[in-house]
Image (cartoon, rainbow, N blue to C red; front, side, top):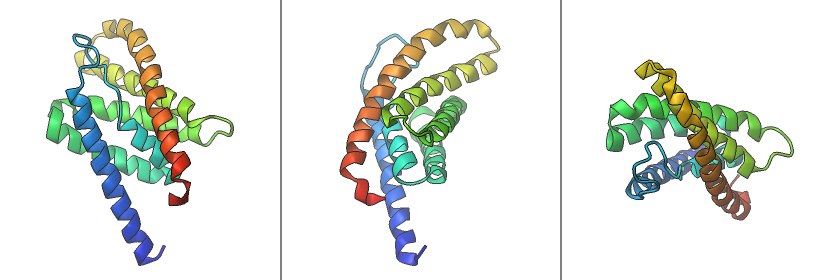
Length: 167
């Protein structure tokens, strides 16, 4: 890869990371389900879907790791870091695998990513709090993950349709 291409790629990654952080901040201002912990729109997931499909999987992993680290330090505090990381790793692992399967639409991949993010976070909470009783909450979060994953997947797919030349 030429020097110019590397510079463009670094700049694009910086823009995508900034977009993820801004979307995460905006999302924190939106009361999705007051009184129901753990429910968020997952807007920055749309940027990861974009990265998985339009860039490459290693770049998506780097963006996810940077976003989790920076968002934890800027907004949520490092107490939220293990939960965000567990959700991000499980979600991106599933999306990375599924994105390579022929016939699966990006919206479907995003929906699975939304579900797996919630599974990762609840799993981490069960480990850290040493209680399996959080499993009952998984059904609610799985439904929410499907819905929010569909929303972010549709948005990402529409952006990808219009930006195919970026690849």
